Amino acid sequence: MTNKEAEIYIHIPFCIRKCAYCDFLSFASDEGTRKRYVSALTHEIAAACTELRGKRIRSVFIGGGTPSVLETGQLASILEMLFRCADIDQKAEITLECNPGTTDREMLSALRSMGISRLSIGAQSFQDPLLKTIGRIHGSAEIRKCYDDARRAGFENISLDMIFALPGQSLKDWKEDLETAALLGPEHLSAYSLILEEGTPLFENRAFLDFPDEEEYRDMFYAAGEILDRFGLHRYEISNYARPGKECIHNVGYWTGVEYLGLGLGAASLMKNRRYRNTSSMEEYFRNSESPEKIRTVEEELDLHDRMSEFLILGLRMTEGISAEEFTSRFGRDLTEEYGRPMEKYLSLGLIKKENDRIFLSEEGIFVSNTIFADLL
Image 1 (cartoon, one colour):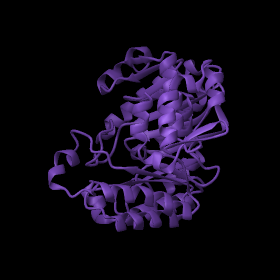
Image 2 (image 1 turned 90 degrees about the vertical axis):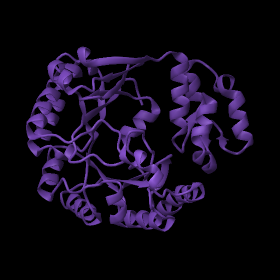
Image 3 (image 1 turned 120 degrees about the vertical axis):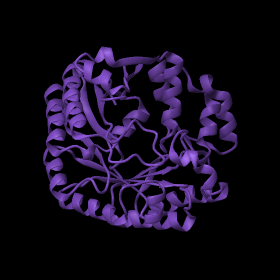
Image 4 (image 1 turned 180 degrees about the vertical axis):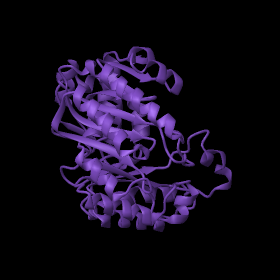
C-alpha cells in the first residue's frame, strides 16, 4: 500500500424487495427514480473525483442494495464516467454485487465486457425454506443459474455471500450450505453471522423465531473454517475466505488503511484522515449531487490515537495480523508501549499470538474478537 493508492465505493440503494434482516440504506423504487439517480450519480462522480488527483485507483466496488436491478446501459454510463474522471489502474479489481433472480447471461456478458472483473453474488443459503424466512426473492435454483451464467459470461473471479445463525437453521443445514457453495468452485466466499438489527422484521419477530443457541452458533462458526479449508478456501479475515491470490482487494484496503471515496446516497468516505458520509435523503442528493460538499457530513476527524487504534483493530481482523515494525514506521510510536497491557493479557491466554514481527489472533481469538477489540480500545 502507498499513499498514492485509493479505492472507490459506489452505492446503488435500490432492490426489488427489502430482506427481513437488512438495515442497509436500500429500498424498492420505480424506473423514473432509478433514472434520476443514475444521472445524479454521474454528476457526483464528475465533481468528486477531482479529490482523487494524484491517486491511482486500485479497486472499485459497486454495492447496495442490489446494483444489478439497474439496466445494463445505466451501469455502463456510471462506469464510463468513472473511467473518464478517475485514474483507474488497468489491473484494478472492479466488483459488482448482484442478487440471483436479477441477472441473466446476456446482462452478465455485457457487465464483463464493460470492465467489471469480479462478481459478488448474494446467495445467503441454498435451503429454500430458510431463504423464504429471511425474505430473499430467489431460491437455490436461481443461485445456481446466476453462478453458471456468470461463468459462461467469462467471470473468473466470483464471490458468494453466505449467512449462518439464521432462524430455523441447524448445524446440518449450515454444513450442507457450505459444501454446496464450495462445490460450485468460487474464488471467494464470505460467511457472515446474522446480526439482528433493530427495526428489521426479524428483530421485531425475534420472540417467535427459533435461533441457534450459543453452542450451535459456536459449532457453525468453526464449521465454516474446517469445511472451506478442505475445499481450498482459506480464511484471510474473520468472515472471509479465498483461494490464494483471490482475496478481495477492496476489502483488504479497508482493513489496511487505504483511503476510499464513497459515491452515491449514504456512501461513506475516508480521505485525508477525515471520515464523512453522504446524505441519506434522496431529494437532497438529487438537488446537490453536482456539489459534493453540500451533501456530506463530516463524522470524524481522526487524530493520532484514532489512527493507531484503527490500524490495530482493523489489521487484527485479518489472519496475518499486523506488523509491529509497520506500526512504528507509520505512527512513530512503539506498539507495546501503546497497547502492551491488554496485549500481554491476551498473549498469555493464547488468544493473541506473536511470531517474529507479526501479531495476530489465534483461532479461538478470532471467535471472541469483539471482546478483544473492545479491551484493546
